Length: 312
Image (cartoon, rainbow, N blue to C red; front, side, top):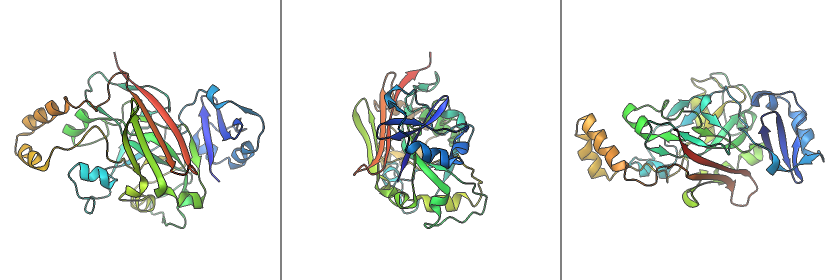
């Protein structure tokens, strides 16, 4: 049975039918908490609870940690960028854990950024050390993946695209909202991963709505590839890609071909001039809400709500 773990600045909590029960633990990190399973289980049966609405929740994934992300891992997203889902490679990039923020914190757009985008993603939280060479299979993946979280891979597109690398554009402070809950799953529940539906709304408008069945590379394949070269530790976070519906959308193929023949400076000038007219990019005061759950609510990662603020 899933267990929803919450975190405030000074404590860990477990969501129960009557409210939030405090976890009696000395753990200050996600890794430390995951190592104290008896304390988590004890909290699930506690009758000493407080209203969840009264808690000032922060990210249930603590920093520092590794934050690894998959690029273009939903077939719908690949097609929207004029790619072929059957040939797209399994590709990773890194984000700094300094970009992690709480599920209700403001997303702050740096002053030099103009094209701020959103990407609803399921985050895998590792619960066990995975040295390089670890063998991951469908039978043992639950030994390594402790649980799931809602994440939003905020992106500065006008920084990302000309640089042809993602690290800076996705690593500014507040660019990885996480939570509200770290939902710990057992092996049978993890098998329902593809049933999870990702939904993201901006000011109430549904922008992204797709299940994880649209993923090109599922978690077993992803971890098999990642552990060929990257060690992972308890508390590390893996973002698994976003579906179609982001503000950024590729121009039609004929336009892309013509633009590709232009010098880079001219190409990007024309591209960003067109993108500047795209009202789907995040604006000051926009409210971004992200929810991830199975359609029958048997697994529910909660609801994240952030407000976009422009740096002054």
